[in-house]
Image 1 (spheres, rainbow, N blue to C red):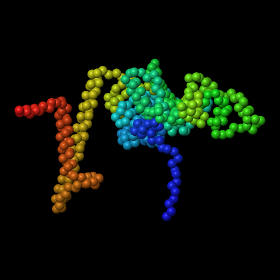
Image 2: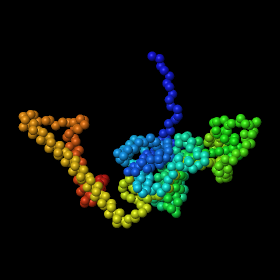
Image 3: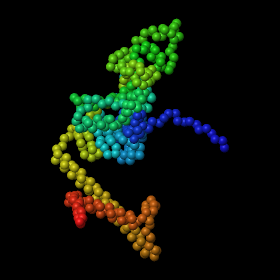
Image 4: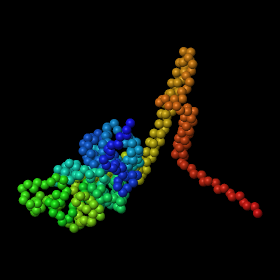
Length: 407
């Protein structure tokens, strides 16, 4: 049989990591909804997935039956580093940012937000290029304070996006920017999402439009091509008319088809949404549980914190004890059931059933080794309980005497 030529189906390189970084350094995220009123934040979750692209699960399907531990279990094999969880109550909406798998968890209260389509409707010429979402955005943090919870928020926002290697990054991949500004008066974080564009300085607007557009202009009513460039237009926006010196830069690389390397260009930022006004209300040590490190409204004394930690330790101890008792009762009931079955066989004159070396899933296992392991774990648990009640004791190792050398 003759060999056929391989048909090429791969049309682009699958970017598993950000340019200028390794695959292990690239953070990945899950954006999903939780709670009773999760449908009210559905559109906002879709916009946040667009912000976190390309290193996010854009087609993630969550259901009401999914628990948090379900997402945690699949986050390890997929390399997920952060969870962005949106929830809603009757009064407010919340955003939780979790670091997997052990926390911390930052809870933000969403005071106000605008969707991406609402931001686009408010603009005269909205710009939302599709190729801008093929690379991660740049992160700009402004006015963050020196308090412990603000430092933690700074680290969290930085680690949500891949770091940039300035020497290896390509300017053409820097198409978006995420700005997080902290307002010290209101104690709120202002979240903004922009697209980045560069345009050459000093060029005719008609010439720039001719170079950037793929459609040929209509010149049927003109006698000469010079009329197309000399014709005045009055629909220029304020951002295009403003030519501030601080916006002018000399590009080191080619940015697009118009802005080339070693050319003076101006940087244009245009908001593409969503925008949010956030307030940090709580910081937890674990994954949506654990010790509360910061709370905006509730303050506790040192004695109250110590009491809460003792109660948590007692609950954990009681939970372990109940689990051990439950496992013991299950095994006891299984033995009683086997003994009753053997007694019934003896009454009917049948032979006693031999113990099976298969578990409930019909997998072979060593019964004696399983029972030995069970005894070992019970002894370890009892030892741990005894040390917890009496306190840990430390015995210093005895020093060995060196043998004296005889002359």
